[in-house]
Amino acid sequence: MPVTFLLEVVLRSVVMFVIITITLRASGKRGIKQLSIFELVLIIGLGSAAGDPMFYEDVGILPALTVFIVIISLYIGITKLTDKFRWFELILEGKPLYVIREGNLIMDSFKESGLSKDEFFSELRQQNVEHLGQVKTVLIETSGEISILFYPDEEVKPGLPIFPHELTEATKDIPLSGLFCCSQCGQLDTLPAGTHHCSGCTCEEWVTPSQSKRIA
Ligand SMILES: [Zn+2]
Image (cartoon, rainbow, N blue to C red; front, top):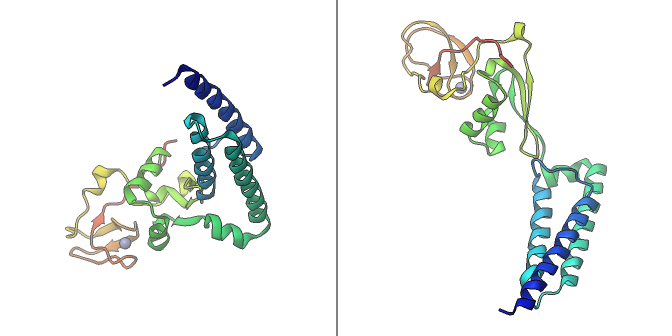
């Protein structure tokens, strides 16, 4: 491979680097923490157009630049449309999902979110949640981020513990009557000894609810 071509690769990379930076600045986005599906499309589009002209001798920079201009114009145009028309935003980005209300998991919207319970509980644990009775509302945003509204200390209810060692203690056979919560959806119930189905999700496994306050 001729050295001159390697030097050309260096030059092409610098040029593409500058073009990518300018394009992303022009998109109006600030730092990117979580990408919505739509933003991911933008990044993939730009990324695949940016790579080739860096090291393929016969791929010019001009076609890549054209791709950049088209994609960024689409991005800006569509962003304006989603700001203006709510229905368009719903089609493109989906809607935020309420997955917990009053300390209970809403199974239907939780399934719709596509998250696994392990992932979801892990996210909650990282926000210092110990059991579901500490949270009033949890919303999964369209970016995939989780928004949590907490109960104040005096309103914390008994709720489903979300640390793995406590969940493994779920039982089908309740030895003594008392307050239990469903190991799947977190619904609270005062149950006599024996076996019972949860009225919320038909699961049969129960856990002793936790009542601790949240330590933030
Ligand atoms: Zn249940």
